[in-house]
Length: 230
Image (tube, rainbow, N blue to C red; front, side, top):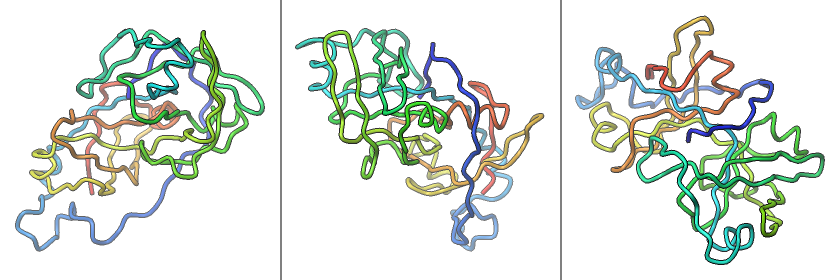
């Protein structure tokens, strides 16, 4: 998700890993529905750079901003129904605090905090790299708002890079929800970004979400285009 108005911290090393042999994007696959190299060449995905942000539950919203409070829409983001709110909070870790962390709406059933690896060094937490919604073994944090504070036993993650894609488009290109693919990036910092998760839903808008550190490492900007290669 796109985030705004927070400073960019220095970029630490990025995570890479191997591809599996049974990737359905392989041009040599026997299945007649599998995409060819030519069809994949047409799959260009716009970039959305995600800065640190918070998704709040109703309960935590009430504690931080007052009972019955609501988020104020500041700016829509590309994924349908989602938006950056005017409201911000402070994240307090064992070492330091990070102020003015944007909240993204709408409210969720469970509070989730997405930070960068560099942020985790500042806060003094060991945030795991996880897909959004997977909060198992996520690390604790204190969230401070204008009306109160909450100490969360978990909920802090570094978001796994991923592609949002409509289900019908995913089917066209032989992609499946939960599949890992690679993308090719051109430019002065050209390279192959591996282990990008596919998130295919009926309501998705086509976009690859990377964090600020990944964007800096590859010289990417919002709306840059990358190509799925396998």
